[in-house]
Image (tube, rainbow, N blue to C red; front, side, top):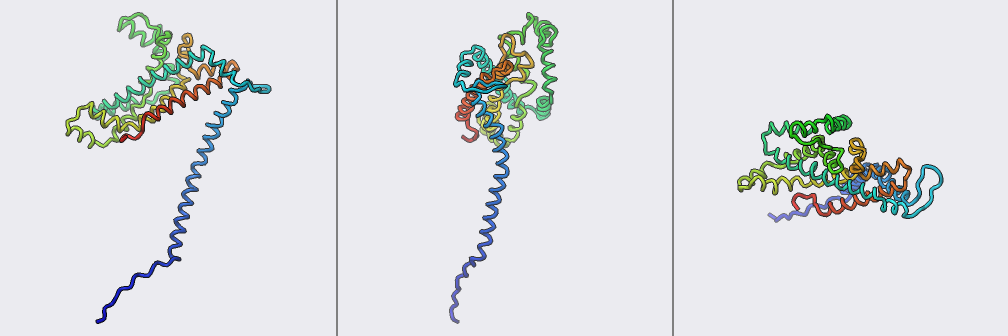
Length: 311
């Protein structure tokens, strides 16, 4: 019997490959169109409400901006005025102090509390999460805390005088204490602790079980597992906390009006006062200073702290 040889399979027809390539090209083009359809509104919004006001503000800070009449170019006069203004230095000093205290008390402490709560019984942990997430009205909370801090019949004054038998305390009336007492409500009214607890619950339990088998202590588990796994959340929330605390306005405005003697007057509050006095260019110059301060702190912070928990 003659040996039969198998002939190689014929190559695929080129016309049969064209529809697949054409379909892939159409899908790629469609995906690009869909991406730009979502990106364009966001880009336009950022340009119109973000970068355009920034450019206009920088331009106005170089003029004698006024509500009526022609505007003339004045160069860096506005920057020189606010730079030599002692109230500007005081406002920046108050803002930086407030931001530092706020981050230490209302940002770092919730991380520690959230980690410790995860070591408690599930029932206790659920109740603490519920109390942490109580929806409180901002205006109602402000009114409540003004009564709590009242020097004559406030709750804290009652604790200080009747329970601790101390002298009557000034609380918000003291230039040395006002910033601390403004930040204390943040521990109870709002804190990122609930977000940290959600992040901790997403960590696989096998990590902790393996660490316990190796004989790791509680501190070792926190340092090598909990904190590194929380790093992306911490980096994001700390960025927002830095920006928000340096731009704080409403809480000190409602509680103290910047008093006593400007001890709680932040940069944004001073800008508001300048706008009320029709000093638009000076207020804008302070806003530019604040923008560069926040940008510098944010850039340095982002360079020093990495989001990847495995780095």
